Length: 308
Ligand SMILES: NC(=O)c1ccc[n+]([C@@H]2O[C@H](COP(=O)([O-])OP(=O)(O)OC[C@H]3O[C@@H](n4cnc5c(N)ncnc54)[C@H](O)[C@@H]3O)[C@@H](O)[C@H]2O)c1
Ligand SMILES: O=C(O)C[C@H](O)C(=O)O
Image (cartoon, rainbow, N blue to C red; front, top):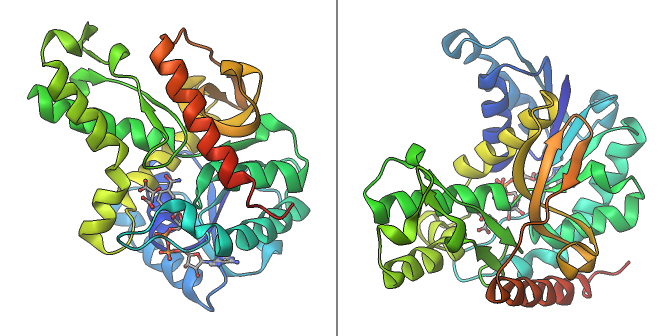
């Protein structure tokens, strides 16, 4: 199993590290445009192998896509992150050009690859990859919901005073400060609805904290987060590489699912060796459906800014 990660910055390196530590891939290629940067990160990570006990071979490349040839999975993290006070949508001007060039180079060398898009604004960047590469929709996956759901579980556990492993919950919709749809109605503590443990008001606070999870970290760090994003990407890569058939909310092209068309947006999907094996349509309440429609409107408005 060969995995390429484009962008050896904060998220790309964290993602490569988690993939290596889980030890399911034979090879990870890190590629960056900055001279020597990916090679340096790869060497540093390889020097953790004997300490962390993995055999995954990590190599670096300065913009040489020949080294990525025949990758089974390619992750795109190249592009600029936001600064405090910015929205993810404001990154479109620079990141669209980067994602378009990078995805085209990847496909040239790995025509059968599955692409995971991370660069922001992620739903729009995922749509851009659809529009410009023409590869089948099951092989283009945007990472956002897996991260947002992890943050949701963190906030739920905090509110419940429970261990995170006791909590389950999912966030669908767009990966934006206003577009996320945390499914509080379906969240559970060991299969008991969380509403049985905490008040409506506290649950509303959890929902709001989840939606601005990325912005909160950006305010604290001065740039956006990388540990949980890297871990979320590595979980998707592992589900595909190991054909786990696990459900994750991912940004995928919807063609009628949830009543939506012609955009990529977060929905629960089964991930396996073919990438998106299926989109799972869960029964949403009228309010949740309305939130999905509003979220889709926001994503489509950003998509309209693309020069396709
Ligand atoms: N979808 C998500 O949940 C999620 C989570 C975190 C970050 N992000 C996004 O991921 C992106 C990367 O964030 P980061 O914190 O790693 O940023 P970073 O600045 O640390 O790293 C980005 C890297 O991309 C490289 N790069 C730029 N143009 C390139 C090109 N054409 N080819 C190859 N490499 C190129 C840069 O040299 C840099 O090393 C940002 O757009 C950020 O908003 C998304
Ligand atoms: O918040 C950001 O800009 C980065 C990422 O989308 C995140 O949610 O951490």
